[in-house]
Image (cartoon, rainbow, N blue to C red; front, side, top):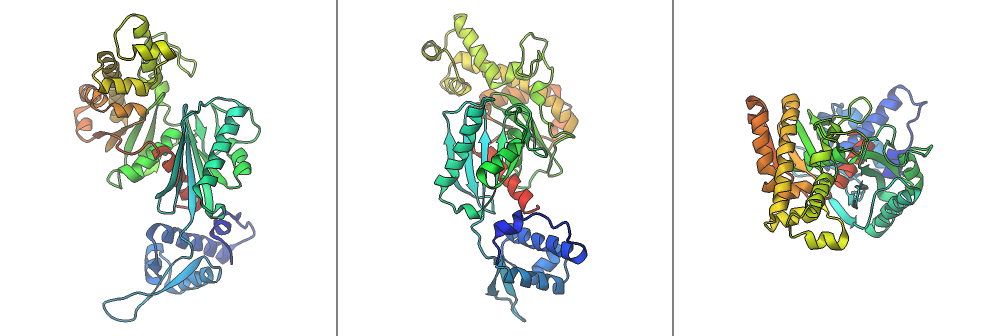
Length: 409
């Protein structure tokens, strides 16, 4: 008898040829189907997976012997012979997801149906390109999994998404921890003892929105992540779009403005220099130094810094300067989104990230600008909405993506 972890994580047998290799693939498909759809009859499996009844019977019998599938007994029918129903022997199969952002780490443990079993947040964190920061990330995730109370032998994989340019195929971040010979995913796999998928945070959030927010209602979406930076995730016909090198979505580094502000990427005039959370924070502090009145003056004088969440909360408390800065950003973002929808013609544009919490202060000028600068036919076909999902959508998306990779969805 082998465990599900051993079944999914064992390396492909390069010597397996012909019918043996084909049967291994079919058995994984059966397990993946049961993981998504639940218990099934042999007839259901044969129909959904396009396998003959004799073949599916033989493969399920092998899975029964291996202890991966269990016979649940017969089910009631309206007439005729009652069929047996089969399901995975242990539904307690888990995946972990972690979103490593610039100022926090959000972590979840999920089951096969993408339900969150346990979640935690580490707020006292700053992402930095140092060995000490990497150790903090690894120890935080490891301690979280230990505290979750799950059996580590039932954890099949860990998805980790983070800010910056990330290529999931190479398992490398090209912004943080780039001096290591091993890829970041390889370092984490050795540390955790589990398969690790490294993903970009915006793409993970985009996929989480697609699965949990759209519920299959839209197959072509653009997700705009307005946090301390700016990036997009794109779903085309139900699939994440990566581009050739896995770096698609760096919309914040479009040379959109004729200004002298140096972006984090080293260039001037990027979209991020005017509409990101960091840009709005800098504008607020500049305005305070120039004598503008705001309810955030005392906070700035005590701490000498302002966070975007402070500005959003101040706007909701009728602070004129905060409202002005958010509305200005909304208008500029809307103009840039018009550019996106004219190219992609998506069904939905979803605004996520910390700035989405500003609500109508952001969305009303944003939609007005999109309407003004986009093609009418394209605008009429696109639904705009701010996310209504929790902040753990990035870590949940990362858990979903490692789940899909392991069970071959």
